[in-house]
Length: 296
Length: 311
Image 1 (tube, each protein chain N blue to C red):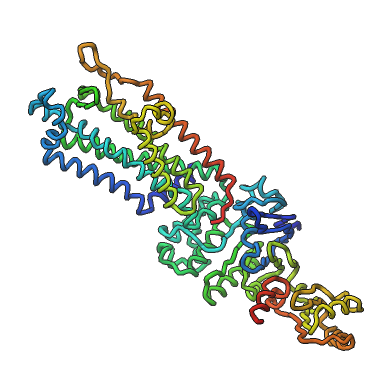
Image 2 (cartoon, rainbow over the protein chains, first blue to last red):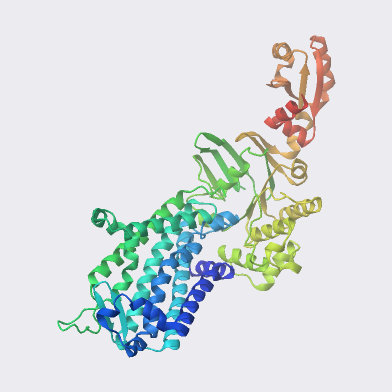
């Protein structure tokens, strides 16, 4: 199994297209950081324009606000929407790409079971997703910390503002990245399942992204009847629960409690839903692939 | 010694299409077994079933005396194959491709062993070139190298000369003969290049529309005592009736829409022609078939297509 996994990873990282995702993520992070480095004040003024009157932020507050933690949060809000596409590019290509190249039949006449082959392919896609996330973490989190320094982190929510002390932030990012890894694995599993049916990569990649987009729109729709009937069952509803790690509990005096998470059970519930989706997609992929006649 | 491949009543349906129908054959050890049929006859479907890429609708396959689907891994460890086009990882070099397929077959070869494999197919000098820079012939040879990388006992080659120039075809022919005569491998080779198959095969199976038409040793199939004769007359129906009632009825093989097929010893041809004249049958043509192409066309529906083009 390990030897097969090494082969799959070798193949993934030998393809130039693999690095598109790394390049795209780096470009977005760099542009975001460069923009804020040179004109962060204007960005904050624009961002705070709606609530500035109510809170009357002074310049020193704004200086403290614009730190590495705050900027990383902004980057993640943008990038974690685009990341599924980058993940689908590799996972959707996993089986369909081999079928398209004509190498699937060569692989399946080797003494390897189809289930084992599929699991190794999926594992390689997951490892790719994790490496992409680590890359993102290094650039967005550590890069921003290096460029902008660290300070208390301010989180804007519909209900108001929360300030998390700087010593209480880093672990929340690790948890959020861990959660994002599971969320992106769900997208990878979906693209992987679709890949089993197809004989070229474009189909599963486009289909996976279409499903993610439609589900995300449904997840975001504020129509009350969908709140109980559709939204809780869509995996996209649960993909954004990583933000929950940055919503903290407060004392009656309004002081945030270090180490607390506003609604941990809700995060864990979302996590379980994602895990169920991953297991279901993978089981379906194995079931279909074991029975499939390889005609490519 | 018992057969290396034993296929019994193999059938594969793709919905309403019957790709392979009740096919049975055996491949003895140490020979080159030619597998012939026109395009769409069911050759590739049969080979894919032998390699577990396609599940049969019914029937059984035993390789090395073991049930293929129960002992899949054990069997595939000893089988090397290429199927139709030689598709490999174009963004990797020949050496990387070979290393990768060796690892997938569960063998770890040294750099020298890998280079020896490439040398055998004449690619040692281009070992470090990416496959996307290879010609069709070089890809085909590399495909064969990947099939042989784990030193299999049984080699299955599906259309190995597809897209090759005459020199490439001759190289593959020599390689097949080398593997059979020198390395004592068992080879099953499918092709529609009849002359090539005639040159390399010890035994042969011809299929048409998914069904077995004939199977046997090449020297027996082309035995003069088993010559196929195509007879055309001014009235085939009456001629067939007369033949059926005559002493020549044992030579009758088949009545086709445009001719009658007879099977007889070539030495008896003059005598049979005299008999036909005596029986007052008006002969338009009397053609005895000797080459594999003639034989193949006389046995398969390809012959009928050829005739329809002539008309």
